[in-house]
Image: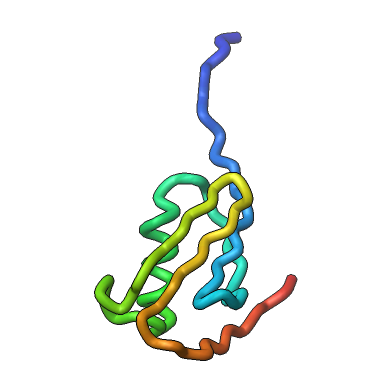
Length: 82
C-alpha cells in the first residue's frame, strides 16, 4: 500500500451582502472567491460591468462579502432550501 499526499477541497459558506442587505448565501471552495462573487452579480443581473460596483469588502475570516453598488437597488433573491 502506498500513501499519497493529496489535497481535499472543502466547501464553506459565504454570505453575500449588497448595499448592506443580505442578498444570498453561497457554498464554495476558498479558491477564486472574488471571481465567483462577480459572476453571481453579473449572472443575476445586478451589475453589467465592474464600473457598476463602488466597492467590495471581502472578510474571509467571517465569511462575509459586502458589495456596494453605485446604484441603490433592492435586489430580490430566491433562496432554495434542501
